[in-house]
Image (cartoon, rainbow, N blue to C red; front, side):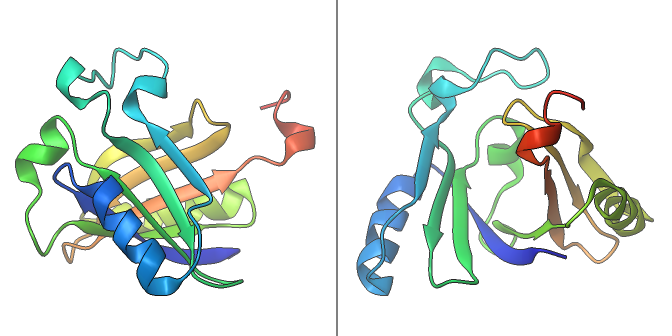
Length: 149
């Protein structure tokens, strides 16, 4: 397993929260993208009201841990509440491990997004396990293999 991080979900206040965390942890945001930057996708429609919300943000806390987050939109916003607004994000070192972990966590759970190739060049999936814990599995395809997968 390459790393495990916490992924926070917000009801539209992600950008403000991460500006606060940036000050608290005295570090800098390394990546920030908005829903308006996402390619059109029939499986994930974003309203005009949500296009300026955060799709993904990363704040390295040290050499090993990254605090990540996004704004919940669409159906995710409807079911989000304090207490379930986080996920554990795992980043396996190879695709077979990503598949194994995703399938094992899915047993008696609920898959929110199947593990499949994403527009950012990773295999990504989301699920809630049988204990109600939200998980994200993200296998980053090595640069020299992106054209082959």
